Length: 251
Ligand code: PEP
Image 1: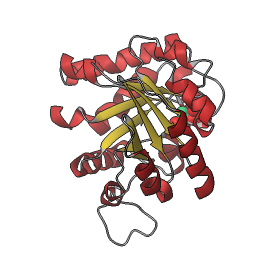
Image 2: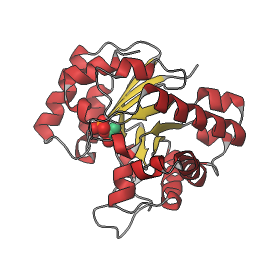
Image 3: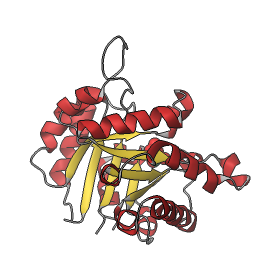
Image 4: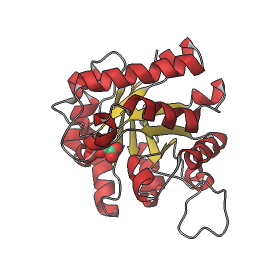
C-alpha cells in the first residue's frame, strides 16, 4: 500500500524564530493517521533544529529543498547531500520548477542530484511539471515523460522505490489557480503508466505521486480523493499551521 504524504515547502520564507514557532504549532496540534506521512521542508539553516523537534513524532519527516550536484569542495554557498544527511533530514526535494527556471537546472543535473541523494540514504521528492504554454500546445504529457525519464529512469528498481514524485504544473504554483481534480488525476495516471512501462506493476502501484500547485484546505479533499493522487506538496498554504493541518487531514 502506498503512503499518503503531505509535504510543506516553506521555500525562502520565515526567519528562525518564525520557523521554530511554526513547527511548534504544527507538532503540538497534529494527529497523523498511520497511513499518512507529513514532511516539513524548511530552509537548510533550520533543518537540524526542525528535525530534532520532529524526532520523536511518528510519521513526521524533514526535507531539504535542494542539494548540490557536487560532493564537496570549492562551491561557495552550495550544500551537499552529506551535509543534509548529517542534519538528520530524511528527504530532499529535487527538481522544483523554481530551481529549473531560476537556476537553470537541467534534467541531467537533476539526475546526478537524485543519485547522490539516494546514495547518501536520503529519500527524494522529485518534482515535474509543465508550463501553461506547453499545456495549451498539448505537449504536456510528452514534457513530463521527458523530465521523468531523463532524470529517473537510469535508477534501479531498488533506488526508484525511495523516490516520491510531485506533479506540479507550473501555471498552478503560487498562482491561486489549481489544476482541476480531473486534470491532475489524468497526469498522475499517466505517470503511473510510464513507471509501469519502465519498471513493473509493483513499483508503479507503490510509488506515491503528490500534486502541487495552490493546494489549500478547500481543494485538498477533492484532489486527494482521486485514485492516483496520494497527497500534496504545499507551498503558500503550508506557512499557516491551521491551513497545513487542515490539508494533512484531507484524506
Ligand atoms: C510549491 O512551490 O511546491 C507549491 C506547490 O507552491 P504553492 O502551493 O504555493 O502553489
